[in-house]
Image (cartoon, rainbow, N blue to C red; front, top):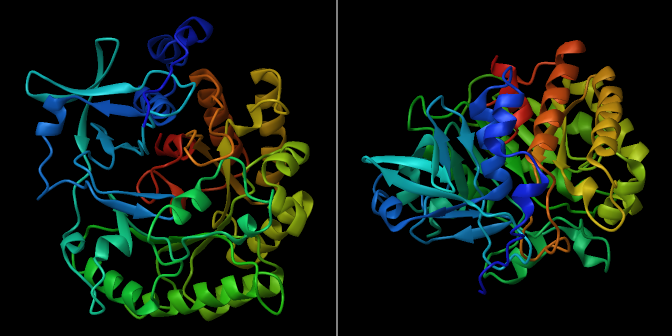
Length: 417
């Protein structure tokens, strides 16, 4: 893959990490650092790679968006326990800011930028089940992957929105990741059951189980097969627990009221999320055309509100790919306009008991937005602060999506304070 061609002037156009930390002293510098690292990615020096111990650290990884089995660590953790999902630093990205450098200084693994050391980091540790196989012969690390305190399962490796030309979400690389690999589309429910059972033998490691995958549009009614599949999986996982509910989260498509009731009544699912992705109808229609055509922006929100009636306040979220609303040529023209629009729409969701949670947009190969560039660090910090403030205003907790059970969202990390 060709080396990236960086925008060498980007540092002149926005506040630096150090300047943002100084401008927002009331926000944890750990969370600001995490945000910038997730935005820009990382590369590793030879010295940093020599610190990788394959018996201890996670280096292999498979989810619906990709797979890696090289020598690099899967992700990082800061000194206060903040998880940093570094994703990938894609050297073929045409316009991208310089990534952070993971290096070794005085024997410590550190994050640096232009020679300045910002933080000491650790590599994620590998769970014990990664070295085991299911009875069918599948490596368990290909069935589930682990964040520091969560079991992640991606049962469906493809998304049917991509079957209709022009209907795939423009920031998403799921179709490219599936078609360029030898992955089976659907995981075996038996393999999932065995892997979760094995993972839970590591006492005290996990606080929740998480499911997500591509949309399945099929069924007697739209999305019925997706719901059926998740119900089967959740029932199998639930066999490991004594009570009705177990600590779990599902990110699925926006299901109708009947489907939501089935999920709640027939399984032990505790928390439901349906990612609207973009908080503006015009931008949603452009960036997520399949979701717009099959369900629609306003209907998506109404289904989230119905989910609150079923699962309860604090147990229904919707994810945002923050930054995509600024994409060219139809995105917002200024960051101020983007921030105001997102937080106005987010307040409506919070008022109705739904928690919007933000993901830092990583421009990924294989996506239709591959040539795009994400907004400034300050943009993300202000949106994170705004989303956290709205949850506090409307009394919405995010216990099932906080820094321990998820670790992906800078705004939910703020709930620790």
